Image 1 (cartoon, rainbow, N blue to C red):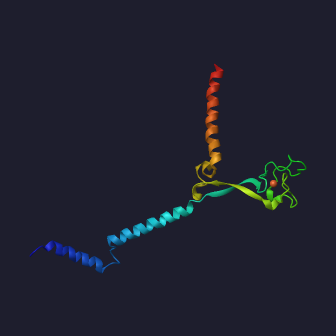
Image 2 (cartoon, rainbow, N blue to C red):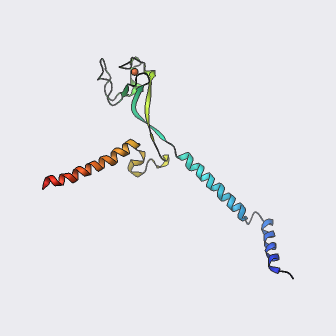
Image 3 (spheres, protein in one colour):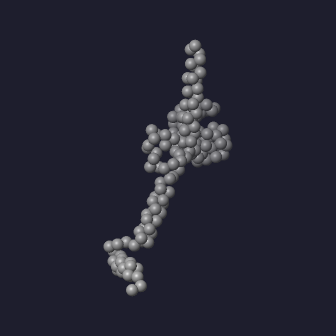
Amino acid sequence: MSSPEPEGEQVTAAVEIELPGEEVSPMDEELSRQEEKARRADELRAQEVFIKRSTGKHKCTNCNYEYDEAKGDVDTIGGMIQPGTPFAELPSNWRCPTCRAQKGAFEEIVTEIPGFEVNQGYGLGGNGLTGEQKNLLIFGGLGLFFLLFLSGYAMS
Ligand code: FE
């Protein structure tokens, strides 16, 4: 006689517990949702890597001389390496032009490209640029526009 409605609720609750396979309780649902979220976050974290890209330069760890593949080694005395020669293709008896250190004393100079690896191919190639390249693009573009703007005065 006290209250029939709570009894009814209790009955349905009991049914839910009896059949866990068919109806997932809100607790389980929330738990699995959180697990899914955590899994997704881990996935994204794994994708956010800083890609290292070779600059085509190698630095002598002994004297800080930089070998630039684009320039080769013709500027220094006795330099016979033509521009465009990759560091790996330098003769094994090649020495650092300034301190005579061997090839093994050189280490590759790499730059980092921040961001998600999966996005590198998008954005008109802009996502694959290094910070320096992006700066050049942005401020170079601004400078060009400024010159264009000033040249308007030259016409009058
Ligand atoms: Fe050196």
